[in-house]
Length: 101
Image (tube, rainbow, N blue to C red):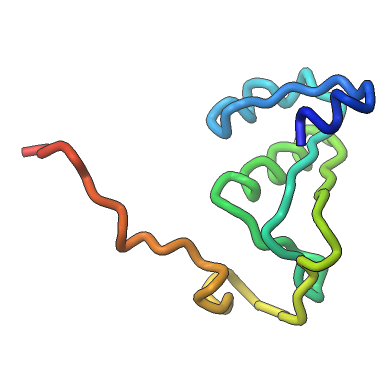
């Protein structure tokens, strides 16, 4: 997305999720992609988008979601646990390569 925006002469910066609160005061707006958009207008996305949206709201920065129209889904989840499994991240495959103890 960054390359496409810069090809249109739109200056943008990609940052780490962990730097969102630090950088938020300096930005004009926030743009994210989405895995899906549900009927309520909520988005289905990877970890970090919710934190970004909360920071943007608290600092009164516009928050935009850019996604393709085929990603609109006929779901109305009440919370994250109501999402079908195909939209959830499979955390059981995460393996710690280092022994902590």
